[in-house]
Amino acid sequence: MQLPELLLQKSQWLRNQLFPPACLFCLQPLRLNGCCESCLKQIYPFPSSTCDGCGAVLPQALAPGPCGQCLKVPAVQKKTVSLYLYQDVVRDAVLAWKLRGQESGVRWLLQAAQTRMKQIVSSKDLVLPVPMPLSRMRLRGRHHGADLARMMAESVGCAWDWRLLRRIGEQARQSNLTGADRRKNLRKAFMVDMACWQACEPVQGRLWLVDDVITTGSTVHFAAKALRATGMDVHVLSLTRTVKGV
Ligand SMILES: [Zn+2]
Ligand SMILES: [Zn+2]
Image 1: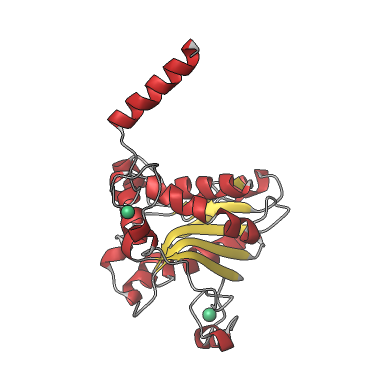
Image 2 (image 1 turned 90 degrees about the vertical axis):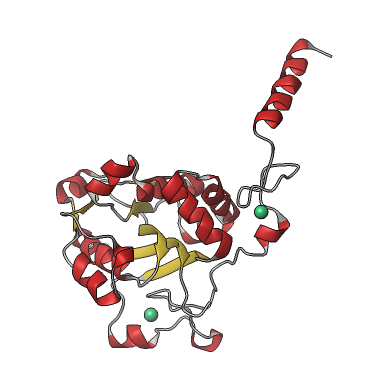
């Protein structure tokens, strides 16, 4: 056996001793890093029959909508797509990423959805994250939304920008608020940096606002509303979304 081959085998053995292969979601030992069968059964792609505008789940016969809500008041965004249901191991993976910086589960979910994402987002599109309040960014030392936008953009080979859409002022955490309070909290929370937009390369494709979780939809509604200052249609892509009663 050649020396480099021996060294490679030894380093692989050492890596396996230090970091034994495991399920990226439940940490159960596996032959290779990945997703175990039990976790795989708990990962649900988001239903495909939805309202095209707001992305809410609709019965197959009524898709692509518009849904009752969009008939009354059309969604600000032109299209909303979600990749996974926010529950079970998917919810745990998102929380592990946001709260503890463990991104392997989220990376696996993005990798598994790559083909679907390439059907949704083209290489000419521009991906933008929902901006975080500055204080939270300082506290955590990271901008999760920007990390997600970067990972999604890299996955489909398109551009992304985290400075274009800005957060103004400081707002209370959305998860602590009721629906009406969320809307009040977010009404004036976003603005487009027009100097930055004008200095940007013109976007040949579409504009995508990306978020990790859609719950009530208030955040993407107001962020999309602010983004219309660019004069472009806004499309929304979320990694996950909650559905009532699931
Ligand atoms: Zn598992
Ligand atoms: Zn709708």
